[in-house]
Image (cartoon, rainbow, N blue to C red; front, side):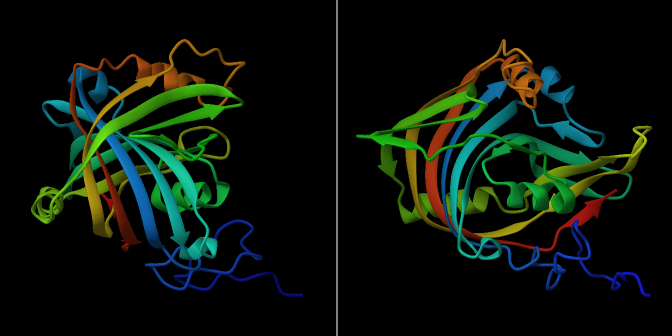
Length: 270
């Protein structure tokens, strides 16, 4: 009798003998093409020392420290057979200075998502700090959109944007140029099975190719709902409470855009 055998350089996810391996390094199982993402972002300055205390080794918060809260409705995803999901991402503007590598961009402190499959891929493959939550579609009324994330009915955060004004092609080009040379960054940390240390622990580099179709300037505001008891949100209570202690010193921007994306080959940073 022969046991299941791993093929060299293939991507396997548990259950390893039942889920098919990915096609290649660009594709997570089937594909990593997002045909349409609708994103809403509110950015604000906060206390740099408090942010720095939340960053893994090698990451340095930019000065001034800026946090971006991005709510997204992701649709037409290849590996979900054309389906989609919603998320709220908490990013910090950073640079990474390792023993060998340098990168700058946005480090994801946490992402709350409403579907398990992309959570599994993000955690096991990319080192993205993804957690399960209730993240419904944005509520759109007149010229205002609002969003939230919750656990077991307990709201963790709330945000809204209003006063949308469509950006010109020149302004969209400026958005693209501002993002050149920057990337989304993560930290892949898997604890050892005996809970003594870690099996792996390192930073990750997660590039994408994005095509912005439309974009809008807006006004916006945001808040974490602090003071959450463990019994009301067993998974995310401490995450939301800790982030609620980061002060909103000044709103920097609010904007929205529609894009298509392809996730490119990621890599380990040292």
